[in-house]
Amino acid sequence: MKSALLSSKPQVPDEPTQDGPRKEDLRVLVVSHGHPSLSLGGGEVASHNLHKGLNALGVTSRYLARVAHPVPRHGASALMSLRQKSDEILYHADDYDHFLMSNRNTDDIRKDFLRFVRDVKPDVVHFHHILGLGLEMIFAVRDALPDARIVITFHEFLAICHHHGQMVKTRGMKLCNRASPTDCHACFPEISPARFLRRERFAQSMLGLADHYISPSHFLAERYVSWGIDGTRMSVIENGLDIPEQAPPRPLAAGGRRSSFAFFGQMTPYKGVDVLLDAVGRVPERLWGEDARLMIFGGNLERQPDDYQLKMAALVEKAGDRVRFCGSYQNPEMPRLMRSVDWLIMPSVWWENSPIVIQESFFHGRPLISSNIGGMAEKIRDGVDGLHFRAGSAEDLADRLCEALSDATLWDQLRAGIKPPGDYLGFARTHLDLYRRLREQRQPQPAASAEAVVARTA
Image (tube, rainbow, N blue to C red):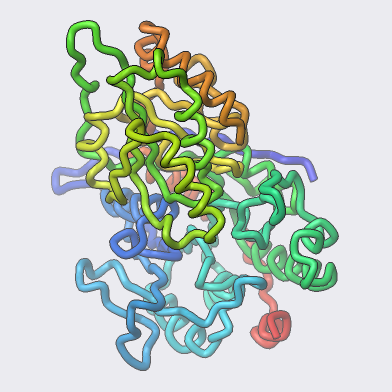
């Protein structure tokens, strides 16, 4: 299928009235797999920024976020008040089939979720994820509100890849370039190709009920189009930031170097922290010197497989005092943490899509050193606003570190090439323009019966 991907850019803002933003005759429901106050991930932050931006532009936006164990359910209803804002609500869902991406508790969908959407009567329902919520949510909206426009933003390859949506082989961390029932069976021998085919058909049928799809990167969009998503209904829209202040460059003493490196993220095998530690240990002592340091901001190492923890322990011992582990962090801390950083490093060994840390780094004027694959290679321009190294290669990353430490002009050169990322208001304006177009263009689609959907997941 031929792709017709749209690169959307922020629109000129609507003229405000004397009492604030012009009120839009549009009701939007933004649905997320988590609330950023409880689960701080890129998808959660992006969806919440969209909700805030739409309200700031005069759109009536509601925000529904999934929550599950260990947060207790309040009572008989799956709907729970967040007790922060009246336009934000939690939906408790914890009976989830990860293989089929299916919510087995269809009673709550019918009883609570559908009651909520019928009361709200949104013109647009924008799903930023279905993880934990289930693909049935898409059908439920189409069935209950046939004239509503449904938009889906993809944040990774979850619908394509059963391996946590990473598109990395289960053996050897080899990158996967395509998904098929046969290829997926090779990664999961205990699951038959027929079951993978059933998973694919179910996901595509439910996703096909949407009116439009959004990806924050061309790379991710093209993967979904190749998998079977209609490229004529796909737009590429970068996520928008809501950061109050920019961190100034780290002050340097006379003759000082830009020698402070940092990693921000979860310490999982896919993020490549082991590659980074290996690379730091390979930089010659004469070049590393006493002023260079690597700071690691992240957590959850204790939740990783035992063999990975042992590997990390050996690399930490080898790196010695070159590395400082600073623990996990919250997004509001970033401006302060950035004050002590010159370079950000993204050593991920999976494709990535559009990690928020790239935008945050550019917002604060920090060049990045990243793997040369996927969304990282798309967002970070080698030699312009950052440096690339061969994904998974500690030797190549060590060469880039040596380059950053030895070239006194490189940091300023790359910093000058950074294009400031868009903010959450421009992000919301672009979506609002899309919603308006969909409202004018869309013809109602027929919906399958509820019994058919339940049968698919049985």
